[in-house]
Length: 306
Image 1 (spheres, rainbow, N blue to C red):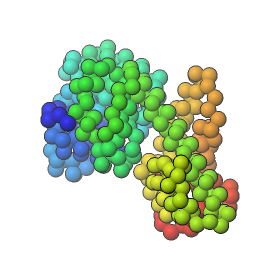
Image 2: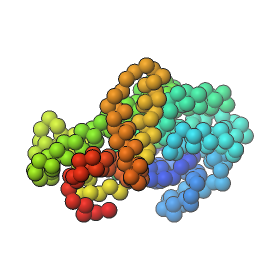
Image 3: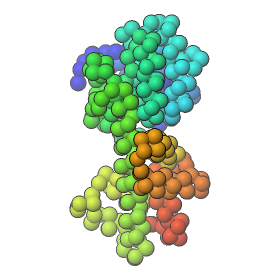
Image 4: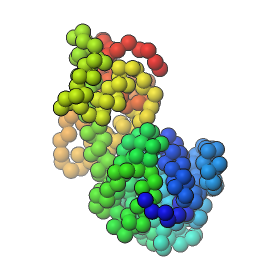
């Protein structure tokens, strides 16, 4: 990992953003931060400077990172009043790199990149996978789209936050990769849910079934981590159902534009919609199993935790 120190702006300090920013501070980078709520005291203690607006962050920093819930929020932070674009106009965009690490529309990303480029700055879309655990452990998978030179300059920042870092292609390709990731994750959660529900309903101990399957071809991170959540009933969010719903909607919207059929992605999206309708939108996406359990009138395991 490089020992270079950058002036980094970080906008959006939620479940993922706060630990990601903390890892940048721990790596020796100077942070200028802005978020809707109060800046975490731990970041202030680590030397992060709270700014009044996204424009102020942009004026201070050479690299501006956004980590926000969805496309409209990124649009607002970049191009709204006191946004990143305004900061670029005021301070000059030459040499600056805007890095969006949110999971948003690939089509919108290409438009955002062109508008940022017009102000003289480079743009990288760099969505992540790994959830809150990966954000805290600095082990995120980071999928990048953007110019090679800008990616090379930003690599020390990515190395402070993640492990598997790939430049996939041009602007939008990072977001396309993230959508593909979310399709795979959702369908794996659905598969593990169905398997454990089947086993439990048939009278087998789902914990022992999971243990047995972890040694075979069905082994996966989803079976390991989310299968355990389903059995232990620990659905506090690492990644919320409502956010995964958003990602699957991006997949289905993109599929319509491309003329591609994604039938099982649509199925997973409907199961998540059922969960949301029953008040589980804020639960971890492993709680997708609850929709199948409600249809079967049988739980994989008794509820023992919130």
